[in-house]
Image: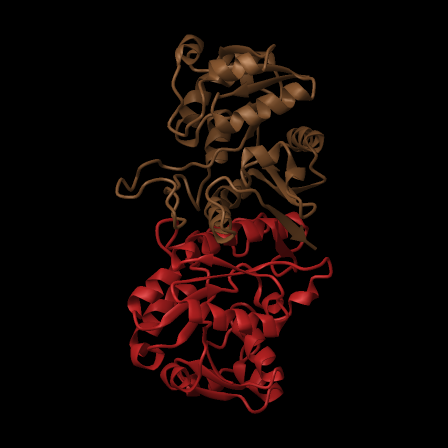
Length: 238
Length: 238
């Protein structure tokens, strides 16, 4: 398939590499391709320059957000949460009728300048929106003709693309959205990643709980003695 | 053991009945014992009058909040979230040095009068506090000499007291708090209920994630096709 991936950060690179391994044609979108390719230093998370990643993954095309979105479906949104709505809203034409999978946590970075991030004791940045709205719903309202699915958000993306990295057994991935066909397409993508238990939570309003789970996910990771980035899964036991 | 339980609602009755079955001496606290015993109608959740419950569970003593808190340890706080701090703050003397287990979700009831609760599509009431504070931390600040533990909150209380009701296997319960001995006492209580996987998330700040998990818990329940009150567990898969 021709798949579009918006964003070039560490999380989304896991999807790009996995989808390329699975034989898909990947169209990556960035705000300014020339600027992205000109970077030579790691980003604030220590992720190497994207040009280096491209050299290790030949055949992947880099475009503007709009040109990438026009070329593939589903579209995976890997733009960080606090920039996502502003970056996606101009793409209404390119995204109309398409499945748009959003996995961002809407963290407000550096709202507590006295606390480094991630902190060693489990406090993560504030969420906005939170509780009575979600980033996924904001994106859907900004793009009423797109078919937004919230998924992947309850896990680090390295585990999303390789669920069997968790040695302890089967665990659960979630989807939510207002379009059944888009959730089905997302579930098939997850199945191709190796997920065997994908639970449809229902309408997109359930993205509120999925995004707010971020703090619980961090707490569990710290509780298990991992620093940020440790691997574990959540299994819904019936 | 002599155990104090504050509150007389449906959730806390699961603990009262289970602890009595386990052979403990239970001291139940309520704001006004005479008023509690005078009620003859079910409450807003359809829970039968407490006097009926007492007649089915002989030997359980009903006191004021303060008298109950003075008579037992641990103290299980079953007062609903939006009343808990105001009801607990006057009990500083009775709770000093004791383990106080809090499991409330700080829902703001009826913040959306146009939406019945629980709604059939998974929207639950707004949380307050949320994200940058938690009810458990508020209680700890109001009672600096108590040893607050957040636990039980990620489950319906009928499942908390009987985890094996979930047929699909072992699942995980969580504790958080700033006092290791109080978390140990809570873990032993959970073990006596049948829990075999109790994960210590760390300091009480992790109660934020535990309380915010309420929306995800509701969404999973709806996703599984349960109405509110369905039974499922969450297993942390390592």
